[in-house]
Length: 456
Image (cartoon, rainbow, N blue to C red):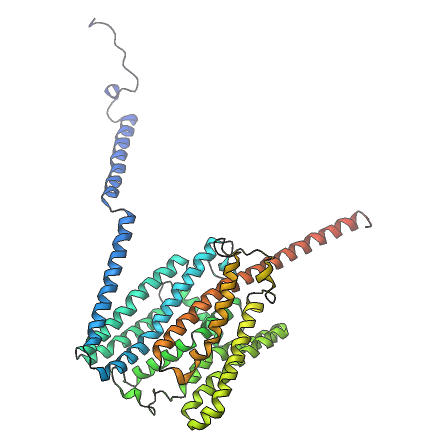
C-alpha cells in the first residue's frame, strides 16, 4: 500500500519548483485578493450617502436657526427710534445678494426641468461641454445661501453690540469677495462659466456684434432685476463714501440719498441695453418685429423718470399732473409687456394655443400639456406685470419689505417665463432643421428626376 505509485495533480503546489511561473501567479492572485478586500473594508467603514445627506440637512437647519436667533436678539437690543433705520440700512446692503441667490436657485430649477425633457438648452445658449448643470448651479446657490445670511447676521450682531467699525466691514468684505470671485483669472470656481457670463454682460453693454440668444435672454433677466441693480448701486455708493453703519446716507441731499439722480439712471439702464439690442437686431435682419420690441422697452423710460420727479417738483404738481402720467405710462408698459410675453416670447398666437392645445409641449411631461399650467402662467404673468409699476417706482422704494416681496415675485415670474421662452426657441430650431432637411430631400428628388428624364 505504501509502495504504490501515487499520482499528484499537475497543478499541485507541492510539485512546483520555487520561482516557477505558476507560483508567482498564485502569489499575485492572493495579493490581489488581499488588496481588493482592503477597499471593501474601508468602504464599509464610511457612512452611507443617505446618512451624510441627513447630516448636511441637520447642520443646515441648525445653522439657519442660529442665524435667526442671533439676528433677532441683535435687533431687539436696539432702541425703537433707531431700529427701523438700522433694519432699512441692513436690508439695502444684503437685499441685492439675497435676490441674486433666489434667482440662482430658480435658474437651477429651470435647468433641471430642461434636463428632464428633450430641450437641449446647451445648444440653444451655445454652451461648451464644460457648462454648469443644475447640480453645480444648486451647489453655488447653496453656498450663497450660507454666506450671505452669515455676513448679515455678523453685521447685526456687531452693530448691536457697539462694534460699529467691525460691522461696517462685513458688507464691504462680502461685496469685495464676490467681485474677486467673478473676475478671478485662474481655473477655479468654474472659470469657463464665469468667463461666459462676463463676456455676455460685455456684449449686452456694448452690442457691437450680432445678438445671440444668450445675449438678449440675460438682458431680459436684468430688466427683472433692475431694482436689485439700483439697491446695489446705493450700497456700493455708501461703501465708497464710508457711510456704512451710519445715518448720514438718510439725508435727502446726500450723494447716496433718496434724491440721487443715479437711482433712476441705474433703474433704466437694463431697458436701454435691451432697446439697443433690438435696434441692432433690426439693423441685421430688417424685421419690423425688432422695432416693435424696441418700442416695448422704450415705454419703461417714462415710468421710471416720472416717478423720480416726485422729489424734484412741487407736491401739487406731482399730484395733479405727473402722477396721472406715471400711472398711465405704467399701465401701457405693463399691458404691452404682457402681450409680448404671450404672443411673441411664448408664441401662443393670441391665446389660441392656450384654449385649443393644438401643439404639444415637450419641456416637461409633469407640468406642460396640462391646461391649469397655462391658465396659471398667463394669469400670474398679467398680475405680476401690473405690479411692475410699483417695483420700479423710485418714490415708493422706502417701503422696503413690500418692494422686496414684489421683486421676489418678479424674479419668480421671470423663472416661469424662461420655461416657455426657451421651449419656443427650441421649437423654432427644430422646425428650421426639419425645413432644411425637407429642402435637401426635395433637391435630391429633382436631381434624380432630371437624370432619368421623368416628367411629373
